[in-house]
Length: 109
Image (cartoon, rainbow, N blue to C red):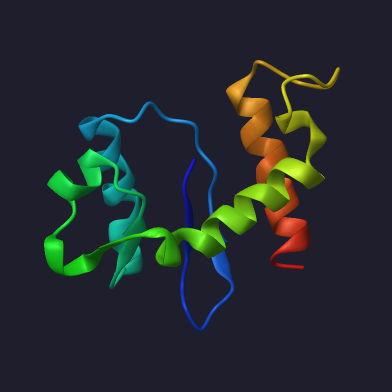
């Protein structure tokens, strides 16, 4: 999953489940290019280190804390993301729609 937010504005979000490969990192960066992103913060995932320009890439817990907080909110408030519930779906499309609707309603209200 990735979560992108623009400072001075409300978060712009899209939740996607992709395998963590260099190819998907390039696809993610291609999706973000229209937004003219100044900085990218991430965990120390190797593909980001290889694909993102060094002057735009920040790593470390302090930079990803807010994103992890948003992920926790998603997991606790959308119970279908917990695998042990009866409403868990194996369909990626269903997850994308539910997460998108939640973000639309609770972040962009």
